[in-house]
Amino acid sequence: MPTDTPGLIGYALASTLPVVVVGALLLRYTRNRAITTSLAVLVLIPTLATLCGVVAVSGLMFGAEFRRTAVVLAVVTAVTVPAAILLGRAQARTMVWEREMLEQERAAEQSRRELVAWVSHDLRTPLAGIRAMGEALVDGVVAQPDEVQRYAEQIVRETNRLSSMVDDLFEMSKINSGALRLELEPVDLRELVDEVAAANQPTADRARITLSATLPEDKILVAGSDRALGRVLTNLVANAIAHTPPGGRIDISAGATDGQAWTRVDDTGPGISEADLPRIFEVAYRGSAARSPGANELGSSSGMGLAIAAGLVAAHHGDITARNRSEGARFEVRLPLLETSGRG
Image (cartoon, rainbow, N blue to C red; front, side):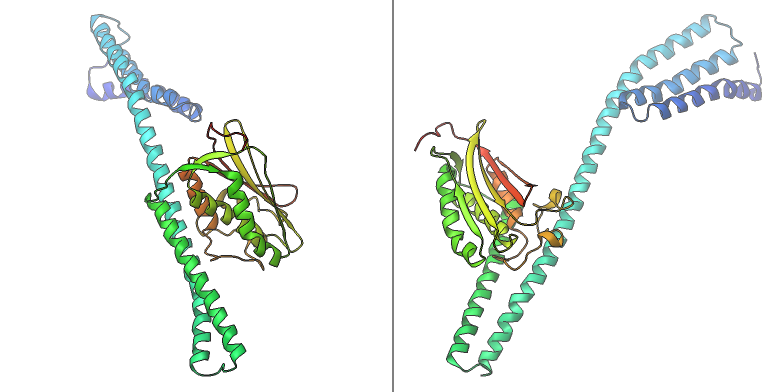
């Protein structure tokens, strides 16, 4: 057994390095396994290395001193391994939570930037038109009564468009801030679908699109806000009209299955790009050219219609989904069904 310091260091290194190498190989092998395994290996490496170092410098003499050291190491291992696993799991959960929060903050910031960019762009278009037509009227460039009437009607349309954009911004801000308060009451989805279909029928006719509603005989009662759910369906139908070519068809249907009420808006448009589907309900996200606003563009065109619909559905504890069909796209809203639903 060595007694000088260099000799002790040499024996300690010679006996502990193999343990560290083996531990490193085990960590590499278990890196894709449960975190518990990796933490146990991490704690056992220094403990076993210490034990091997003590054995080496003692000259492989397993006397009373060695037994005392072994007992101490065994107790330390019994305490530190479970503690390390528990603390490691807690730290891992904290890190995962912090990473998810950071990703959510980045996504929210990106969404806000996109929203500001879209709204800034879309606000300039109607404002520029209103200013140009107003200046033409003030300067007397337009003097014929029919032309003045046409300019005035266009100014009203652009003003209504701006008003709709402001309403969208206000609604979206309430949803994002958690300030949205809904007064829930029994609502029959059949009546809501009828109202939305009737309100959008003139727009569909102008776009040369067939709009129809398919409804069951029984009531479909949900706890909701008539105004909010009407806004959801209106946004979905407006989106479908905006992306369905002339001669196409839009079908609105409703029903109830497995304790849930559902309503669907099916169109015969170009569908939704697979890359756009995960982001279709994000604020100001308009997707690829195939699903970008076209000749039938409606409403404020603020890019918030689907995001508002998703926020209002979530406030009703429901789900909204979008998927492609063999022809066109389907948007589906599912809400908890009231038990009092029945034949009306």
